[in-house]
Image (cartoon, rainbow, N blue to C red; front, side, top):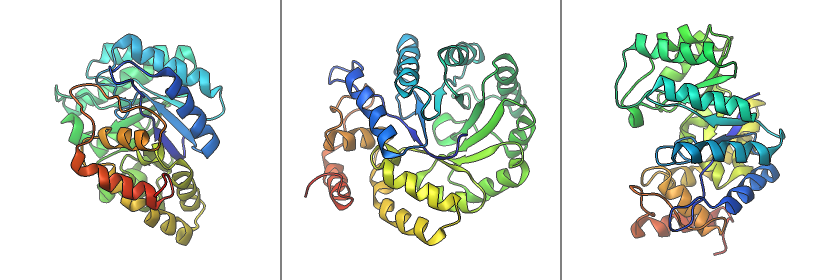
Length: 293
């Protein structure tokens, strides 16, 4: 159910930081038209760290209602507080989300046993498919392979988004868990090799900007069309690089502003893309035919 190109959707904002609901509706429609296989609402790329709780709930409900069961909607409901994550995950289930994406608890640095108990509590308390999210570069917290293997035996834990960039770790996850849960790339740049070793797709930043190409690359990789997948991935490689010149989602929001799909709004402490990186983003968008030369 959660395979292929799953976009980590941005949250469009006006210049004053207010959510741009019209642009959000248009972006959801754009992904439905372009063949994206799933949508993550209010993940890291959706600025979950700066949306308040009411906004967080509103965006998830809005995306679920807009999609109308045409593709899966995965709600970002992780937190460094187990109680808070339980509340958000229950809400996601109530409004009809298809799954929850649960980032490792950040900042407070739990032990591996603490991580296991955190995710087990969510899995047992909320009957909703759940995808773990390991991104130690953001959280300061790393979900060990053995902990993932323990969690894979829980029926509601169906996958892991791994954003370590470590293919050796990804292979270990596939080997120990693939019969019980799916491994998804959290790094666009290694999505192809991860799928070729048994991963099932990518929760993608790049798909915000080039959804059709990203979806086609994932489809080719998952169906064993390696040459076609590599050719598409080669086309996407400059975009993967350009979208991480500064902290995500700064570059991707600017890229979508350049393509005319939303305004430049982003919330402090994040700021619009630095002037020095804007020419590179424009060149890459032009090269892919996403804006005029």
